[in-house]
Image (cartoon, rainbow, N blue to C red):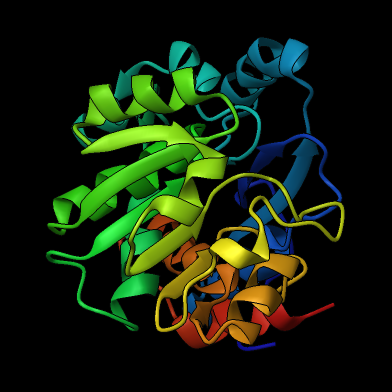
Length: 274
């Protein structure tokens, strides 16, 4: 990998990711590669924390002086009650995916929305685009926020339409409904933020609802070619791997921690390490 790993010492910054289950994360390899490339003395670990253990984990992070934590499923909303300060954008989104130490305080922020829009802007201009977001959890909130910030028209669809409508109302999306409504919704852009496809070869929507010429991104990054993306390609859509959302949001996390621009090449190399 890029850079050279320094020996771990008492001065080494402790960073990591909280998630459950922890088996699918590529974040440690990515962040360690970025730290090495920057010459930043830090180590990054994955912590498997079930929902009932979140408060204890955050107390432990305080006691151990942890410098930064990425917050993944299923903690992005619950962790908001465990920090001292929430950055304004994260508060508007209603979800936190990054906790960074500032003095004695833990500050919650959100880099998911930047990761999403930077990944998508490489494929199409977002202003005026008709976008559909699948899901209504913390990642969906960040994606919807980012698309609205860039001027897209957003519809939210979810297995529970009530949750979709609540999210749409809170963030200002145009409309909401059930997943099955995708077949009737005209769209230029489709983003899956559900976990469908992460642990099984399944898609959150019927292949017949996928449109030729649209851009389809799946936030699931492992496997990279999810069933949704394979079926979208077969229908003539352009696809964006979830790796790019992950890499771009991680780059912003590294910048928040180190004050330096993140080396994208090192993050990509870390992502590809097995």
